[in-house]
Structures are given as structure tokens and as C-alpha cells.
Amino acid sequence: MSYGFKEFAIDVLQKIGKPLNKMEIWTEGQKMGLDKKLGTEGKTPWHSVGAQIYTEIKNSDNSRFKQVSKRPALFALAEQEFTDSFVANRSAESEEAELKTKYSERSLHPVLVKYLDTNSHFNCLTKTIYHEQSKKKSKNADKWTHPDLIGIYFPFKDYEKLTLDTLSLLNEKSYKIFAFEMKINITLSNLREYYFQAVSNSSWANEGYLVAPNISDDDDFMSELSLLNNAFGIGVIKLNIDFPEQREILFYAKHHNSIDINMLDKLISKNNNVKDIFKNLVESNQLSRVVNKNDFDEVLDENAYKNHIINNNMII
Image (tube, rainbow, N blue to C red; front, side, top):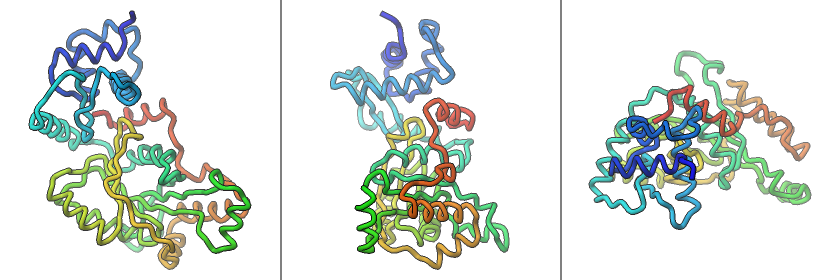
């Protein structure tokens, strides 16, 4: 029987005896010399370790592994038992390491784009809005005007043309427009600033979201976040850089059936990125198909995605 990444992870977790994230599993295995037993490592062996563990947990009722923490993702052997306080402390240690990030907010955009492409609630094409290309009066003048990304749900693959024409005749909306504000770390100290920036930057859209990979789960923080969501309706998404599909929607956004035309007009007049995607929307509506997907951000395949997180120092 060949020795693969699953066996590698089992040996490491047995030896270490505590929950580890995928990079820690790989690093500890290297120290033990277990990497020499593998037939191949590839460019991102730590990602392969995590993918193998996650796939088995997801697809097998008798998985040899279990995930003891999602924020951040920590793994252990199925038979290993740990106290809640031990897992909490281990999670805090790993979360502290995540907070010491060197990547930029914009490098997180492909993570969100990859998730939004397949999630049934969004299923949208997404475009990064480059604020620096806008017509502005002064530095940071439009900080609270532009979203970081705009997503558009096109209904063409979900409905027949006749159905869409009927919806249009009845003045029913078949498109959905999303605005996303991206951050790296959201804590109680910056929550209100970031939240109201998202409120301001998405006031014109059907739904607005605040997005980050590192979001506090402190009780006071979550209580405040719940109050803000109830009052202002901005949704919150916690990204998972390792596994974009394993993201967590902490709060869904309140859906607005109508959009703020005056604010949209302001955005279109200021920024060509915004102008291009709404021009695409109008043309696509006329032809009942998306006319040019190149107007939107590319959804990276697995290899391109791995290279992206490596090149942008996003490996934890």
C-alpha cells in the first residue's frame, strides 16, 4: 500500500497529539522525515494535506479525521478527545497567527470570487472596483462611496427566455446586484467603522456584504454584530482561504427590491469599472445572454488558485 498524504497526516496527528492546521501538519511531518516517504510532494504539499483530510471528512461516514475548529480550520484524528478549553486555546493560538497577515485586501478578491461563482444564494459574476481609477476631488474622497467588488446575478441559465420576458412584462426583477466591502481582520474595535463603511458603499444595491477571513467570535462582538445586522441589514461573510467553499455566512443581508438610482448614477459617472459592468448588464439583457464574461474577474481553477495564495503569502 502506497504512503500518501492521508497516512502522512495520521502519523503526524498521532505523534503530536493535539489539533493542528494543515501547514502545521506538513511542517511537523517534515521534522519527522515523513515527507521522504511520499512518492510526490507537489508545489503546495500542505494544501494537498488539507484537501485530503477535508475530502475524507466530507465524504466518509467513517472518516479517520475530524475537524475540531472552523475558525481557524484545525484537524485531529477521529478517536482523539480534547476538552473544550484545550480546543479553544489551540484555536486562539492559530487565530493569532492568522491575524499576523502580510497579504492585502485586494489579494482576497479571488477567494470571494471563487466562492460567489458557485454559491446558490449569489451565483453571480463579480468585478473588482479599482477606486484609484475614479474621478475624485481629493485622496480618500470616495472611501465611503465605492464598494470593493460588485456582483451581478444573471438569470439566463436558470430561466427560459419566455419566463424572463414574462417577468419583464410584469415588472418583476430577475437580476440581483450585490456590493461587497473587503477587510482582512474585523474585531470589536473596528467593527462599527467597517460596518458603516459597508452600509455607505452598498446603499444603492439589492444586497450589501462585509467580508473578511478573520472575524472575531467574541460574545460581545457577535452581540454587537447581530444588533447592527438587525438595524441596517448588511450581511457578513467569513472567508476560508484554504477552502473557499467552506466559507461561513454569519448573517445574510436584507434584500432591497429597488436600488438607489441616484447613487448608482454617481458611481457610473465616477468609475469606468462600474460603467463597464452595467453597460454589460444592459447589453446582456437585450440579448438574453452574458455578452462578455471578460468584463468580470476570472474564477481561478484549482492550480491557479493555489499559485495565487502562495504568491500572495496567504498560506497559514
